[in-house]
Image 1 (cartoon, rainbow, N blue to C red):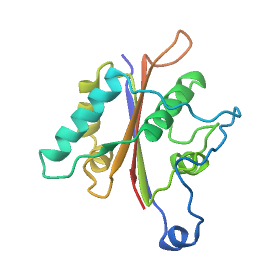
Image 2: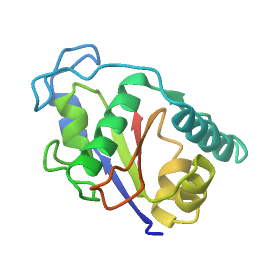
Image 3: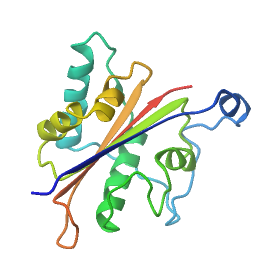
Image 4: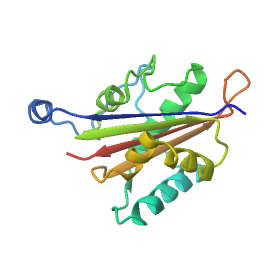
Length: 173
């Protein structure tokens, strides 16, 4: 069974944080397809990853993350994008880098990171894989992050992997 993982982390430069115009998470921003993301409830796999990640954090005295529905929808869009466009990476041909995607959809952030995986079939497996990777583990245990969203999609007959996972993290400004 094929499995891949990758991580990405970014902190906005101080000048960028103070001079950029404030955007509200509720500001309508159009997707490449011309539609706003639809906020829908996380599925059971996504919620279990959220719970497991918070168990890892709180067992080490790190505050639990808040489940952010906008981040969850963006994470799901990213997982769907990787599946549908048959790639595995942080830079989407449709949305750009994780930070560009957050900006494009009007998410305010001071620091952000993204964990991605392809192949793990359960929430427990994907969290175990991430916790055994230095970069992913650092993102999960980073005290700066306040919010997260998890996106999971199953592969399809033409995709390279059976599953696609994305977890976005932000520190609110």
